[in-house]
Image 1: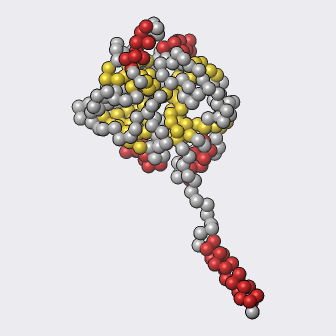
Image 2: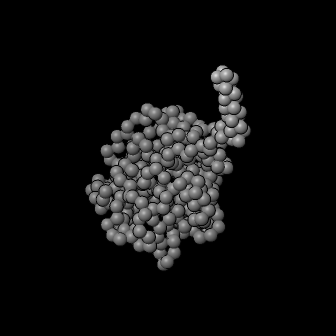
Length: 316
């Protein structure tokens, strides 16, 4: 009797298990989880004069030149083991655009690719592996900006850049027309969080969205007005102001003094540091093709206009 009762119980349990599986409790796998996005990796720009660009990034910026594991025709100017500027030869017929892509560090490139694909975003079929063991893939944001997700190699070597004016790229700025469209990608899909917004004469011109798992940010540069792409009447100089990257420092005035005392300033640059509408000191230099390199204080010294800061500042 006891054996019969036990057999009946086992059969009943198997039926329940099968029913649960049919109902999906043990069926389709759960959706991929977004891997961490741990900060800005780099900005990739084009140069029409490799020698002049090398002088700018190694002397004025103080970065260390290295080979480019992604592209044998390019070079990297390293600020740290995790952040750099990638410089590529200017393609024929490129026009005024000097931006190739902006890149974000992630803990798992293929996991990020699968996450975006599961959410319906167009992705490549696989990640690419670099000569150094890094992995990456590219996608387009809603306005056609190329955004790269890169996973650092497990044995990434330290970078000694003692002359660098700073070692932390705290944000990259991109030409943007439609804030709401961009938010669908960065905010809704990737969980970026608002940091600050501001502008002149009552306009919203700059919107800062921090990566979800650190304090670096992407800045929407909304000065171009409605539409898509690069406006037909925009100059290369103006576009270089919009598509830019920023190096964080404890004190812009101190960094400026180092540049002046070391006779490291050449080409186009601001006459002196100034405080922006966000209340932070800044000083702008421009590479030979016009890409803006902004040095910026980690913390504001004055009250910002327009919006309070809504997340923690980045740090060294």
